[in-house]
Image (tube, rainbow, N blue to C red; front, side):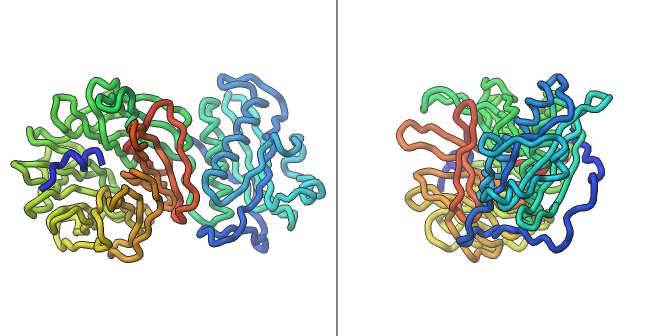
Length: 446
């Protein structure tokens, strides 16, 4: 029987009413979200002009218009579906051009789509950011969105614009306006300091949550983004805490002296799923996130059962267990009944995570190397998406089309946050100020 240790390792933005109606129905500029051989869609993204350059606490509006354009470009490029051409490669536009594109010029480029927008200050000091998408060939507006934000939240307006473009062109739900929690790692390989940290989906607005005095692992955002549940060695033993982001206070989830780990929220935020080891046997429990209630034991099998995650509807749980002799994936009802094994592809399986769409389960497969893969909830269609030395701990984008994970470098043990789409062909590393592991992608921001 294995030790549980490997498993542990393993402004609100107000959207103003649309400035006008969306595109005419005949515009059919779309992309192939499965990336089945079609070329990336080229999109021109000039800087956002401003009717009057005004200073704000976040910089003047001319500077912010350029930065918003850059964020949109980065977001769209990271999706793997588009080839955005930024402001340094196309001509600038005037404020009057935003709603009257110079189509003869853009049709002379190789851009199929055009994103134009503007930024201006309001009497109350807030910013209005407009965002327009055009089909260059048809000379047609496809969609427009407007956002009113505090100056400090200009990046959120950029992400919201990118989300609107992504959704209109791909037909998929958005995911850029979201955040990531992860474990920031510093120090030598054998004595790492592991702190809880959070950042935007593109790595911006980074901040550390804990000071590193106690090792932190496996964070997860609550559905409303107000709290983070995570594993801490604060008292020398692995125990589960909920950290309140607004107040900075944290509370212990269970009062047990037994090691507890692998915490996960239920989709409605009312429950915490976790595992607890007692006398060499590990089982899965759930407890009210409000505290004060007795935990409910869900599994009773000899061996090691590690909680994975709830299905999006909260009705089922995917988890890992070595009851068959090696780590494999199982699905059960949320009350612990109707357990059944779903992984049979050889090797060992760990860290399962249910897709927000409900159609797939991501996992770590250990068969020589550690690789990230997906399968259906019934165990069919197993596909491996990465092929590095050690990739583990998948976490889903809010739209279920992209997976993040952490990669460990052979030799020095350096770790980094990476992501890959469901085709396995668009892999990239996220920028973090220090090494990073155990990523957790939160839902779309409220």
